[in-house]
Amino acid sequence: MALTEQSVYTVNDIYNLPDGQRAELIDGKVYYMAPTTRKHQRIVGEVFAIIREYIKHNNNNRCEVDIAPFAVFPDNDDKSYVEPDISVVCDINKLDDKGCNGAPDWIIEVVSAASRKIDYTTKLFKYRSAGVREYWIIDEEKNRVMVYNFVLDEMNEYSFSEDIPAGIFNDFIIRLSNLEL
Image 1 (cartoon, rainbow, N blue to C red):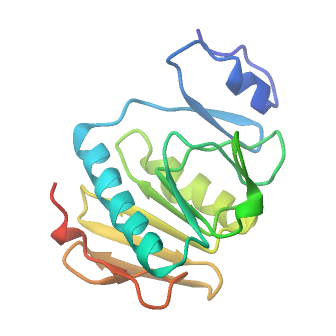
Image 2 (image 1 turned 180 degrees about the horizontal axis):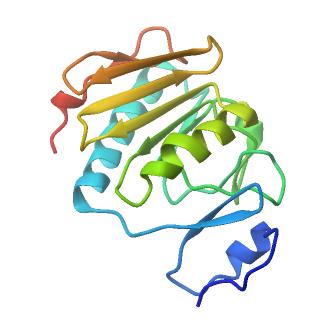
């Protein structure tokens, strides 16, 4: 059952959705989430594993990487709640049992047909205004990764066959064509 029409929703409305129904909340507006594809999940899982191994072996566990469904309250309020595909948080004080209270340092979204507009526009602006340092949009259909480094105010586009540097780490790159998909 969908939510009744009202002007502004809160996190409580999201928590009260029927079992199995998922949605995100951005500035009080609800965005229902469609189920993901197997390919989407494989990309998310592979990228997550690479980041987790890097953090484990090179970052002295100063950062934590989490995979959806993981609650992020980007503005640390009750008007925005998102579940990025991958979140990297380097301020462990933002984390509690409910998720991340405030902006993660790095967010990665894997585009699906249902999420394309939201990932490229709504979330892009929300993540930037909330203080996310870096945002990647992995678009399997277009064989590209859009990398937004909000700290440097840069945007770069990469193909899956290129080395993609992670801006929040000095010596870390990902090449999506190397993944086992």
